[in-house]
Image (cartoon, rainbow, N blue to C red; front, side, top):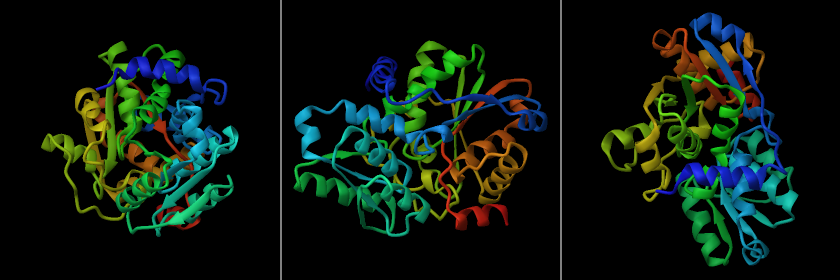
Length: 318
């Protein structure tokens, strides 16, 4: 395993001239409902409305000039693709983005707006990623994984760096979990600094991949079902660098139902007036589900993204 703490500090130095720290705001209504002191880390305020921009910039800024000139390839259900495309436009790099055939239209349109070349392939994110990786190798381009990359997860870990600057007494951090890049980066930075801070991963019951892998003690494939939390759905790479970090640093996982995700999304929209995507719903649902244990504690929810299609939003609030 890499020393995530040290790599996050390097990442912070790389990206600080491109990205501003995101706000940490007190969630008055959520705090009343749960009897906890709840704060929201608003990654929705990033240029692409998602935390993924951190890892994208860190990875691209770590490439050699020769690698940069060849151009880059990535695969994404949306947020990572938009982040890489945005960062490539800022850094004047060529990028090709592969997305599943059923990718969110809102997220595909976001990628297109940054002038990336888009390819549709596969029925799920795993198949899309595998094909994109092979395409990059065949065309001698750098492949940028959405999560299975030390530079990506270290970039996401700069959220943890900011949190410790913004609040001096955090008890628990709730993080949406898919491939594990976000939670591995945050936990890998924070745990060596303060082991008392509890890091909890929240994921949908319809695709609880990382939690089941950790339970099994190895990476396994699951038969996943559709979920409102599309950004956290799908299986993970057999050699994922995030897995051992999640084993080492994440304290617990909470799996939540689709009804719980819907209710959590409605709650955040109605009570805190925030437009969020399904992955954030998993973290808020995790808070509600664990409210008894978290009473009187200072809890941070990573509000990971706001890129939601009208169709998905309708499902959430219906």
